[in-house]
Length: 326
Image (cartoon, rainbow, N blue to C red; front, side):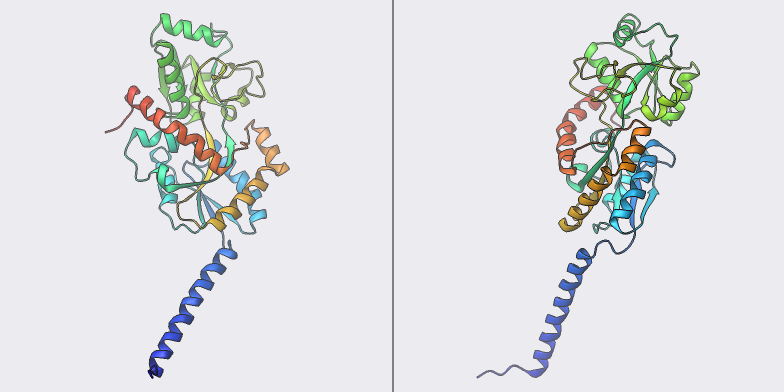
């Protein structure tokens, strides 16, 4: 009868113990998540709308999470630097991103990016829906959105609107309207929404397409003619949305929290629970209401399904507009 070598048996038992320890360690690390601070990466600079929303959300969420949430800004290349940083990070739940929809459905069609949202992203939660709208000054000759359409049809390219850059959600929405109507107007891009708003108020453009956050502090100095979002602005309940005007698209500007593919399911479930409770926290609801920002009811999975439906169609739009950078 064969009798195993004692030395070989010792080695075998050591290997078994080590493997068991590794499995237990991995299980505990997930079970105890989080056991250190979590970082949320905002792919834009400090002080902007997305940055402000993220910091308010993070401060409330960390109480429920039980660990500090550090907000880190990684701006540049239209947000793609920050998005890529998150998607290439270790999938352990300690590095999360807070991008907007444009990072998923617009930027990938405009230039070659080091990431693929279709295969590398896990959406965990939606936290804000940025409301966008087209406005003119009170002394402008246009009283309705139809007035501007008529003017642009008779004066190709003469209506000039300020926006926060070429390829932004609001810019693409305006150009899709122009394509649908067979008209031309001129986008005047700026580095930020704040700069676009200041230029518009100073009379340098005929109109502006911007968020509630940028425009509402100047109430009385502008006339809102169209909500580019899927809902009306609370402060302008009589102004219709782009959908109500018969267009089958809107300026989707949803801010979400994501993670790189590979984060364990148990950690994703934990974060989903924490962020869902944060969205319902009275202090967050109050903070968002103050800046007239909507809190989306969409779950992470529902949001993924929403933007993926728009992905291919947006690619066609970008191609027609000639915005692809070779």
